[in-house]
Image (cartoon, rainbow, N blue to C red; front, top):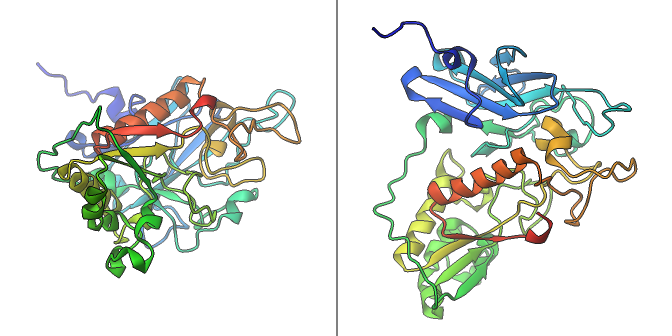
Length: 353
């Protein structure tokens, strides 16, 4: 006879899958986030109508909602209600002789590093993330409802071409490739994934067999970096490259581009940046990893005037020797292959990873 007693992870959440996962049979969201040195973690859920005041706040219990370095909880859909966005507040040891390089700030709203869609509110402010204290209403958030609907996409038996001896790679920047009117692409598609689709006949005319897309990971819209080499998320496609600024479209338009290229016999390779993030050095913003667990995610020097190792030349270097960081990268690679159907990767500054 089956026991009617609820399983422990139905009450306390499961640590096994990072990020947020929709549990269909329980009609609930599972949240899990890695922070080895955190002493306190709070989950915040927001409605679209009010991104300053959470509709729900869940304080993680150190004894019930923590397995090793992973904090986890499960929130029924009935409790989440109409919440659309989510973020975290995390605190840990204050800077001192033993914890000099921690940068916890419980007032900071932090982005889940596993978020597959990043929402930048109308009042998003990069400078608020560069200063101590609250950035409520001005912080990037993860999109919760995408997890529930899963943004279904019909791959139509995607052909997935494979070129070996005849591999000819064409490197392009999604925005730069069609942004100028001389591209001949209709105005609404210029500088977007849809614009790349429009230019497939041109690519075929060149005789290339693969495109290498310069970074398409979501990056800070206020950082003023055109090339995309300062990512804030390893899972979310950059929103500005979508021709429609609506939920799920940046994912589906990217997938439509990949499918169209595959049907034309062209492979898709991504230029990926995993050696650093857009959080920069000690003067840069705290969006995610810095506030979640600085000493886990970044290589540090121990020098007060330059605490971050800067082998990348961008202010920081990810601590890829750490198992949690390696998992973050591998999970991201797996996501882009399994969910977005890309065919390969070019690693930016792989020598420092």
